[in-house]
Amino acid sequence: MEHVYRKESKSNWAVEASGLVKTFGENRAVDGVHLNVPTGSIYGVLGPNGAGKTTTINMLATLLRPDAGSARIFGHDVVKESQVVRQLIGVTGQYASVDESLSASENLMIFSRLLGLGRAEARRKTADLLEEFGLSEAAKRPLKNFSGGMRRRLDLAASLIAQPPLIFLDEPTTGLDPRTRSQMWETIRRLVKTGSTILLTTQYLEEADQLADRVAVIDRGRVVAEGTVDELKASVGTSSLHLRIQNPQDIEKASQTVELVLRAKAVVTAGMITAPMTDADGVTDLLISLREAGIHLAEMSVQKPTLDEVFLTITGQGIKDETASPDGAMKLEEARA
Ligand SMILES: Nc1ncnc2c1ncn2[C@@H]1O[C@H](COP(=O)(O)OP(=O)(O)OP(=O)(O)O)[C@@H](O)[C@H]1O
Ligand SMILES: [Mg+2]
Image (tube, rainbow, N blue to C red; front, side, top):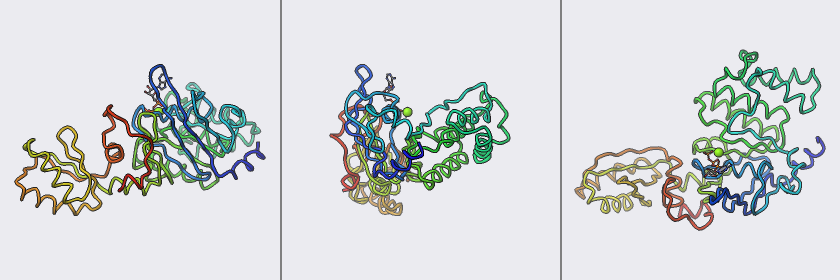
């Protein structure tokens, strides 16, 4: 296995997926996903609930068979060479996959032994990981008494015993408090420094910003944008304007004013005007222009862009809008134009 690891890690692509499709009944959960993950990087798959993130990972991790398309992990086909692929990957699920009745240290011991470590080495590895994840004090407690954050940390710790060349992390920090979340981020960065490639899914733009070298934004089973995080951020602006006006009849005029002053595309959803801003300072000019136009505000805020706004900017529609879907992936550089 050692031999395979070293050789495979030299491959340029940790993941090459092409046209992946998975259908559940009528539902095309994954609808032609293309992904290329460079070896040695952190790659983020960003998308809302039900976008198809977990289903995509499950196909890449040989847990689900694709209905169409193909995927290779370090050059090995996930269907035809699933045994080889399994030796090259680690999967940390959206939910911890460890035994409830056993303690944290017992769980890690079992994983270590299953991976072929000797008793002494397994014990040492277990102690190291518990220490690193701040679980030493809770080590003897059964898992059923663990908080969600502790579980998540233990789950990641378990996947680190082998430290495979490619690690899938499905929403590794969903539901964690800010401190635990940044600990997770540190651990993930360390994994990459020591040679692993990480493919993680997240619903948080900020997480992708903190961690990922490149991201794919997926929506309704399709990649709607792909690029570096900087490209993604540039496409949505550094902050975003939210505006509600008093008189609904003025909305068209208000939206035009926003576009003119901010030189950005404004989107109107449910009476709210949203627009990306490259510079929060631009709001001063906008307020003056709105007053001059006789438009009265009901509500105004400038916020960091959310995932929803990324979607608005990239697809021209919000996450929950079920109407037309964009025609294939768009490069983030185009999105910015
Ligand atoms: N085993 C299954 N049987 C039937 N439908 C499924 C199954 N797994 C997923 N789906 C459906 O496929 C779609 C994509 O689900 P998936 O779990 O991949 O989304 P996700 O992006 O991981 O969402 P979340 O952020 O909520 O985890 C959803 O509509 C979901 O209901
Ligand atoms: Mg999921």
